[in-house]
Amino acid sequence: MKILLADPRGFCAGVHMAIDTVEEALKIVGAPLYVYHEIVHNRHVVEYFTKRDVVFVDTIDEVPANSTVIFSAHGVSPAVRDRAKERGCVMIDATCPLVTKVHMEARRYAKQGFKILLIGHAGHDEVVGTVGEAPDAITIVESPEDVDNLPFTGEEKLCYLTQTTLSMDDANKIIDALKKRYEGIKPPPSEDICYATTNRQHAIRALAHDADVVLVVGSKNSSNSVRLTEIAENSGTRAYLVDDKSEIDPTWLAGVDKLLLTAGASAPEHLVQEILEMLQAEFGAEVEEHKTIDEDMHFELPRSLRVLSNASA
Image (tube, rainbow, N blue to C red; front, side, top):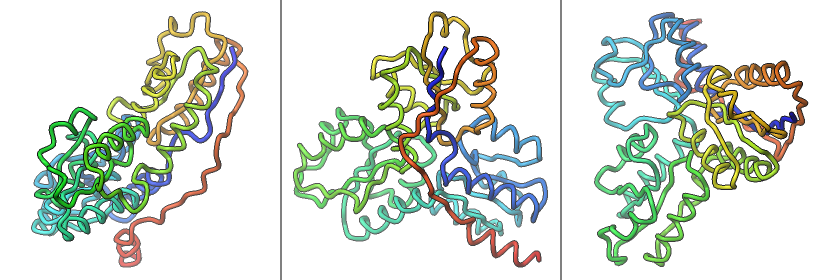
């Protein structure tokens, strides 16, 4: 068996920043430490921190008053921040800066009187947070079919924004439908789908056609990991999303000569390496790393964490 190992894969800059934020906060604040929603959408990361007495909550009211709370990489609505302030919480914001960019666009366009069409998945943590920035101005659009049912005539000031972890193919289909119906619709000032999502999708498109099967390492609630699996399947190659090596069904690998291995932006690299070791042991697999683009993005730790660190020092 030959393994085509995609590069880039795994953690993006926003995930690195969010995980490092929790690590540093544990050193400064200690346990228990509260995080609003999963810090990133990966089961292994969440379990790792849970074992260290990090408590993941779904409502701010679950956080004891006057405690420290970290906001996840996916961002939160102003209502969540306000509630945390009311409870006297020390807030550390680990929102990915690329998500923050979309929040800022939503606020700005809403103030300018635009009706905002947000392309994304209703209920996803990121979308919930973005909608919370301007709930009266935002309408979620999940598919090209949704465009036909929008109540706007085109005489309104319309713009669109996108969730950062979408499939570019899916997003472009919706954007094309929006532009067809509303010729004057305003796009975001720059691309909303994040660099890491784009790069990992490009790698799949470039390599999947040359593989018999694709394995994507990531959790089922990871939007970008699910999209990678879908893109591989759309290219005509069988693809499976797995949290780790224990979820690999041996029947998937029967007769496989070439296997493409990649990981979503919230999946730890050690899970990829464990799969490689298993495939090498069981199939004598040879590994070829295929780099499609260099990544050098880095995000600083949140200012609120740096302030807290200085205060404790």
